[in-house]
Image (cartoon, rainbow over all chains, first blue to last red):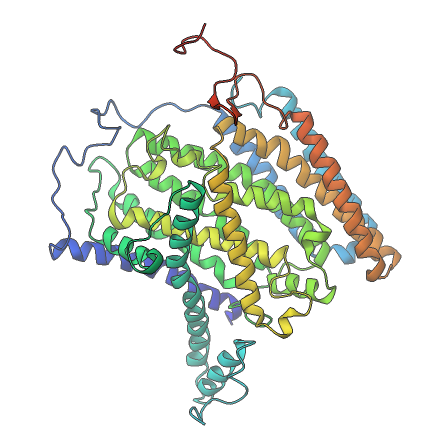
Length: 124
Length: 420
């Protein structure tokens, strides 16, 4: 019923158990006093190259990150539509090819507009 | 017979699926479907771990030795012969290191991030076709499964950076997200060309197609290979593209606050990802277990692992050779260089497949013709495009390497000692 996907999920479980086991061993070593587990306020302070840390980590970010995320979203959704098209390409013929190229073309026009507007420049 | 319960040619190591089939035939004899199903899964897990665990130790040693040679030093050579036991000593060392948790951070997310990193890293190995019948789970959407799962890493890296409550971690995490999503686009668009050509999304299907037509896809789509390899290498956060953990800028990026076992888990996940990317390149572009008849003599899975390690060595080579790029250079390279090339690739490949299948040309004539056309197109396009961007010449402000004197700053700028 699950078929091959069930088998793939076995590996996902291993991917969870394997590092969890490693971290548990490390924790156990701490409890058994095999490794140091003595914390103090200075040691557990936020590390900023040895000087005392200033303010919180909630700092402002360049809004360019947001633009790139938007662009990524557009292209990722596009590709998600195109993968079924690619897999069924043989049965679609010329019409399928033209339709997909128009679909990509619309996005390329938008992409060219972004480029022209300077949305791809990290520093202006 | 030492194992009377095993039927068939299980001892034939040229195809290890014989062994697993023999074992499963034995388990099937018990008459319980659930047990047989779980046994099939467990055999797959054991086989994957039989590759991953030794490789995990091996690649640490290989990388340290090779990088050592690149930097004109010897690398680890004290622990065991040729330093072979160094990875084990390293593993013991990180186990015995103190593991700090920043009290100001988000404790649960902080602990969960390195553990969850491993789920996509190991999970993608399910669809890798090790040999002819040797995929653990031959999903019919294997390519999509691989891409989808490996892009999940972004979230866990961001979890690590965000939960540390450290400015540098957050900077690193933001950079990782921006860079990985940027390089994700060329990766998926080029893989689109692969499934266009082979008409299959299953990795075994793609390898089988290459074996059927006696050609590696890299010969037919050299541009796709270049774009894919560069983009997927950048996604690994290794040195040309390790702005996420650039130690000269932001301490250690998203894992600044991590120590002990949790820190080394990030490294282990990085190596696992690097091996997975090498495996995908070997399978998709370099024919997997197919090697023009050599697979008759050498087990196909050995050929595949050989190719995989070759591409891992290329990764080390890149790391040892290239300097780190700036964040703006990396982003511009993904969006302005790789993405247009990959879109052109999809167009060209689609047109070729259309011409080929609509006209019913024979593969023996068509494929060599496509190979020549695509190679010429790749060389012309990559060369002219790189020239248009000025990637072939230094720009104002760049550091220029002059081999006879060593490093010299390009144009003299204000504030430099000894400047004008």
